[in-house]
Amino acid sequence: MLSTILTKSFSKDTALLILRVITGTVLIHHGFEKLANIENFADAFVRPLHLPFPIFLSYVAAFSEIGGSWLLILGLATRFGALAIVGTISVAIYHALVTSGFNIFLLELLLLYFASATSIALTGPGDFSIDEVIIRVLRSESDNEDIQETIKTKTNSGKSISQEESTNKGGIFQFLQANLLSDTSN
Image 1 (cartoon, rainbow, N blue to C red):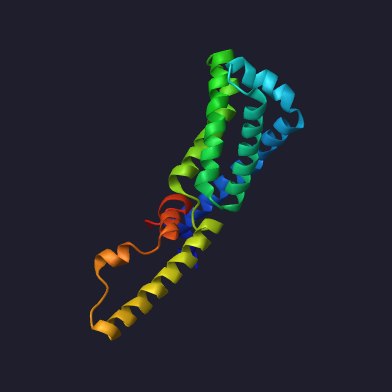
Image 2: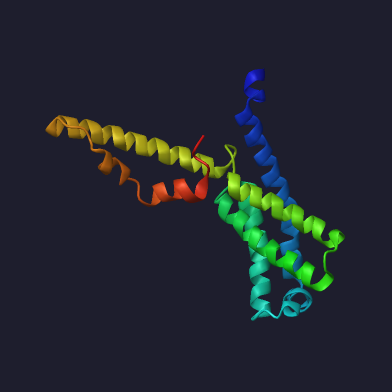
């Protein structure tokens, strides 16, 4: 039991869970603050950057923070949620630099959000996430299909499936597993 708790994988996955949940929880209120007075946010933060469609971009910022935070908390499409947060925080960092220069008191929280979301986007959600559950289900279904296809092929022609045929299987599920859901190299 103790060796299970102290293993590298368990520690890493627990750390990612804590990072995901706390980052999402403390960041979600920023999105709701934007929605509470979208005109004020657009006047204070979007228009000074001379970006087009300030109201629309304000809604995009608010919903990317709210949606991205929920995706982080749940561990569902985690990398997509983290990238949404990275995009919004990048614009916020740019705004802080343009309007106030290098003011560490304005930048420190933004940089922590940026570092947290970037770390999650690069490492994936860990084992304690809905993404990992989806991957395990897809992996078990894929393994079952491969076994059934191999048995069927061996009984019909006495040959096994070629390597090319097995790599072409999966379609959208393989793409999601490889690119969006989780780090499957473990």
